[in-house]
Amino acid sequence: MTEQTNHFLELSDILSFRLECPTCHSFVVIPLVKFKDTPRQCPNGCGKEWEYPRTNTISASLAELLVAIQTVQRATQQKELLFTVEIAKPLTPKEQGK
Image 1: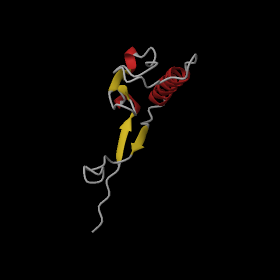
Image 2: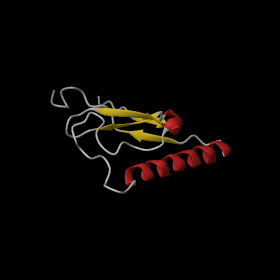
Image 3: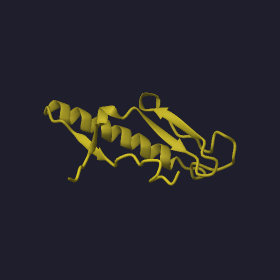
Image 4: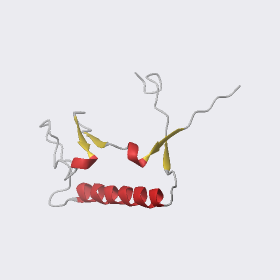
């Protein structure tokens, strides 16, 4: 017998963004309701730049994404539609190579 499990989440289930440094693996978690911008560089002090110099590309894109999520939430609620997003199943430690 084959078993399949799908994972879905509602947009309202998204509570925060997590950004992880590719160099030192420290991370920040930013709640959606308090989002203003992303750090320009790693807050751990490893020196890794997280944003392009003199731009706000990542912060601006995240802000646009938040507006889009809120717009979809309002529109689907008005029409009483349940909108969910399918996500990949979490990897087991063995699949992660640990």
